[in-house]
Image 1 (spheres, rainbow, N blue to C red):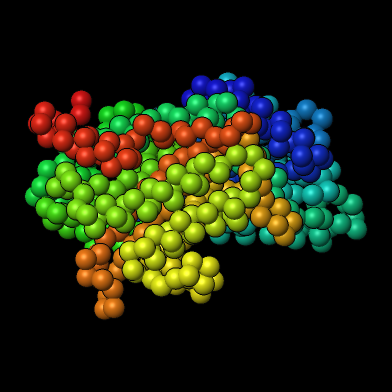
Image 2 (image 1 turned 180 degrees about the horizontal axis):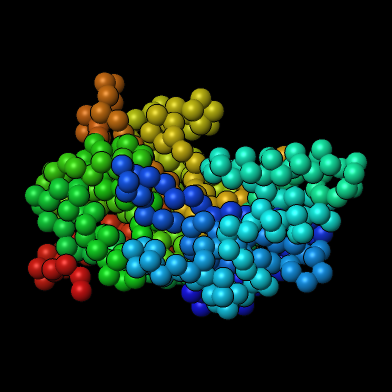
Length: 446
């Protein structure tokens, strides 16, 4: 059941104002088989949830702002006591209206019969051809029918538009309710990273540390990890999206954890890197200091009017390239090292991405052909890294060291607000958190 009907109504009204007399059709995510007859855990399509809070499969939202009486309709599974005994409670038609604030609701089996009434007077249909091929074919058939009958009926949409052109731009800018949800996800994720530092012990495997992180997620009310948790030790930390998490952590290894909680479809995305021994070696410290300095410079620059993918990203590149020259891993001068891309052997990604109800959240980084400027209400990750491969020609002291540090920034009218602030990050804070956990023999958090 939705507990924030006014927020969902506000979002529908904002979207409706943008599409005018068009009609939008937004189906739920399809259920997906994992193996044999077992499904993956169901997660609703983010756009449908954003507009309704409705999280059941086999549902469709139709928005028809130009309709005289019925401007928002949910088609849902009807109540079925037998199936609900097996699979859980359903809102049903009555609950869809009562609990989610739409104008009307009908059984999903009546969708084909009801759509013509909603579409006949609409010149444009907003629909995204996406992952549900069966529903895609349904829309193609519908449009073909309107096309073939156009001369006789003179009705129905002639133009098809992807709703993301409007809806995803609305999602870029977070409301107070969005920010509250993201703070909660960030707070739970912060606790999980602290617990991993405090509760981990030499001899553990990566999956044991993952279990600590995800225990905190679940025990604090998060429904899922926002993405597969990365717990990468030693040379595995040089693999950007390593998710096997099976290796025994070496006593002197760094541990890179990239993990965030998803709470009511709001995502956090935090990365921290710390030494299993409790103390950074000189080489680990040298690499870590470069990444930390790059992140600090980028965070300092984040404010309205700054171009994220040029000014902020290029600042990270300069700090990292300069650090690599100082370590002797690449050759200067600095501008030549940047122009040649020599640093990309060790830092091969950009500085971050939008964050929200999806981890890699929607919204274009460009306006027309230019990189867009940061604006209040945006939330982005800041995540520089250095990944030194174990390859010939690289100083053996640094081989296999991987470091990434990531926080989640809300852009505010006066600058920024770090939603994941307080997660230990300085070398002193990281080492102290580990030491205090071991001195206290900290058990799993409760």
